[in-house]
Image 1 (cartoon, rainbow, N blue to C red):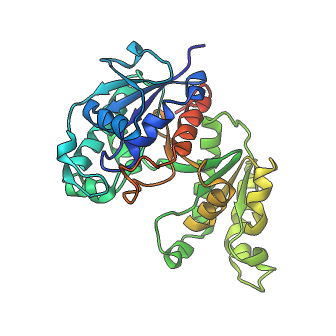
Image 2: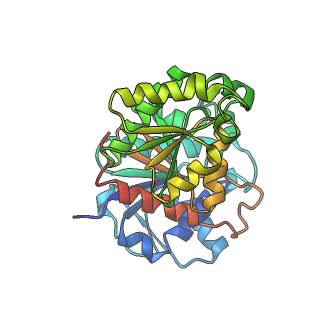
Amino acid sequence: MSKPLIGIPLGDPAGIGPEIVVKALLNPKIYTCARPVVIGSAAVLRQTAEILRADIKINTIAAPKEGNFAPGIVNLIDLANIEPKDYRHGTVGAAAGRAAYEYIRTATELALDGQLAALATTPINKEAIRASGIDFIGHTEMLAALTKTENPLTMFQTGNLRIFFLSRHLSLRAALELVTKENIIRTAEQCLQALARLGFADGCLAIAALNPHGGEHGLFGTEEMTEIAPAVEALQARGLNVEGPVPADSVFHLARTGLYDAVLSLYHDQGHIAAKTADFDRTVSLTLGLPFLRTSVDHGTAFGIAGKGIASAVSMEEAIIQAASYCPHYRP
């Protein structure tokens, strides 16, 4: 079977995206599982190679299948939409934001056309995107709009630990308001469908508890009794493979040991802390429910170190590897 063609939009040129892409594509391991294709700008890559003193060959191609896939060769679909004079490393800029969006849009079009099996995306800067006049808050919102997908689902993975989220970018006080039986049932159903798309036909989902020690039968809170346990019981009554509420101080460890295929975290930091503590560099974000699989590094543009040649490419490498590993199983 041919190795999957993985599209890599270059990200914000003023951030570390170009650097981690070049570093990742110098790693021979990537080519044992994937055929990576960069969607970006040759001028940005040339500048990056100079900063890194990297011996790479930029192979400009018109279509992904035309690539020459070997370490040190960057197969590039060149949009030629920005030059180094148009941006400054570590600085928010409209031109860089526009370029980053155009990389994503083109990569999405290629994936929708079947020319790419999946995308492994690099960081963009929300302020730069907004400065360019594009009205999206982030990658997921862009991809949802470009693919006409409603409610795509985010999953974190590090090693064999998979984490979904009941809510994400909300204050903790607002997030607690969403811990309801109805929301848990709806999100758990989506999580199980997402696991099935990844090849876990009867995946087991653990629902994390909210309060210390799972509330201790109401001593430390009642949400487990009034919202979480009733949701789990309703899901189990329908024959779905769900367990919980499992105390949050143990559920992520148990999932790492293989007892559960995934965990539903009840708010942003509950799951983020677990994943990033387990392995900060190798945590990868997956967007599920799109017509194609999308993985992403789980860090930002790191403007503070951009252009200095010191960024780690481990998360980028993991994003490409995870995309390639799930491609044979993924069903939209």
